[in-house]
Image (tube, rainbow, N blue to C red):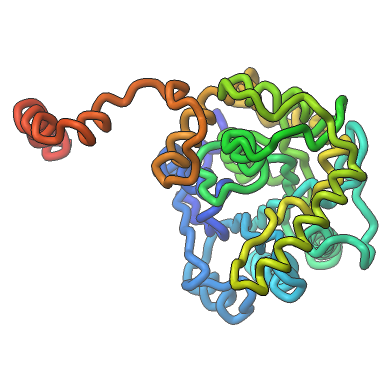
Amino acid sequence: MTQEKKNSKKLLGILIGGSGLIGGTIAHYFKTKTSETVELCAPSSKKLSIRNAVDIKDYLRRLQPDFVINTAIASISADSQLTLEVNYIGVLNLARACAALKIPYIHISSASTLPSGENLIEKDTLSIEPKLNNYAKSKLMAEKTLEHMYKTVGLDYTIIRLAIVYGEHDHKTQGFHRLFFAIADESMPVMFTKKKVMHSYSNANKFPYFIHHILYNREEFSGETYHFVDKHPVELADLILTIRSYLELKTPREIYIPYSMAIIGKKALEVLLRGLSRLGIHGGLPAELMFLENFYKTQSLSAEKLYTSSFVDPNPTETIYTKLPELVVYYLSHWTHENMISTFNEEVLGPDTMSHDFEDSPAELLESIHLDSTTPFTDIANP
């Protein structure tokens, strides 16, 4: 019998950052998979600001939750004050509240706290230095404070580091999906990387299963940090060319731009955008370009600690490569509907007879709906 079945009490949890890819995936999982054993509240930032200690104390005092999960982050392009308040002070506020209530605090961190290199283990963190970008600095400081509170006040925490996350429903078009979009939009003419650069990837769909498992196995996972990544890293160049093949495109060409030239190009674009802004034309480079150096350096995270734990991968054969066909259809459909992209071969998505009828034969479509598809959903009246 599993610990989930032994525990008859229905758990109440709070999820911070439920609107993002990871937070939304967690919320969907607990709503559909564990509704009888776990109830998850996901307050919006308007209802609960983690930057405000009074908000947190009032909200947690009222709900008396059994655990807190924090996936919230400031935008990677945010200034130092907002980054500090959300990524560090907010984490501190939540941790202090959880320590007072003696409940688990599950904190989602990032591979930005690690250096470049191969097979990095959980202890291989960067040093806290002024030269770190705001995002990495704040995430690393948060990790150090949680470790300190575990030792000094008995905080029951687990830190989970994610690498490059992939999955559906990331409508902010960031991270891996920004790369995917650039390829699909044919705005990446050449390869801004070099051969043999390897990165780790994190599967958003598997992640909630790990969260669920560690909530019921606190003795094993309390006070620990885990890399939640696929077992094997992926070569960036090969992934780009595989996506290009799926989309049936000719670009990016397999021409590898040296890092020095990429930096010169980035600086030239920044100068051009500053000039255009004086003419009233405003634009900006993707915030992810602050990590341009990472496109040219390997960073692979060891998954040994994760896969030797009691957690069992719910779908061990699923990887970024096996997931690509679904991601291609999902994101191309979304970007097309939002008029964000139109340059790719639409046959990749397959036929969509109804939408074509809606455009070309609306009267006939309406008649067919009236004939075949207006019967009430009788199954919902008799559960």
